[in-house]
Length: 190
Image (cartoon, rainbow, N blue to C red; front, side, top):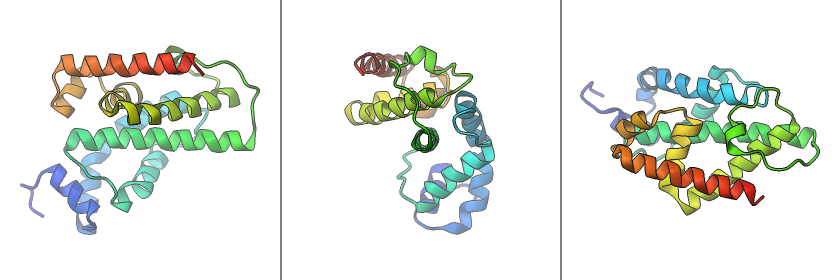
């Protein structure tokens, strides 16, 4: 493929089974994927003892190589990657819980969730709860879920999200606040 072909076109070509673009494509998206993986793993380092490379490999093998994503644009790709990384980490938390169940404590407020340091099985339960809530949010308010994923889980600033999605800052802020409000309300009702 020529250098004139956009990243979105190359991603979609790869998703349709064109393995010839895989190497160059990975080289191009790897820096941003590492950034996202670093942010994700800072939150979950005790619960999911994966390296950035392992998380990206799981993302690539479990999601990208299957060709199931329909990429709309570059921002959409990185939002999907962020979502997939979160799901990988939630799956690791579920596996940890399957091995060892913790005592049932009350829900962890979303604000406290970001600062987990000495993670326990109870914290793993909270990650699973948040993962399930995010899946519900995706069903009810997909636009808000995408912004929450990119900002909260992917570590993108609201300004970066505007560049990646083509939305205005006001639209991004509105969707972020809607998603955050829905998550907090849902966390307190568990």
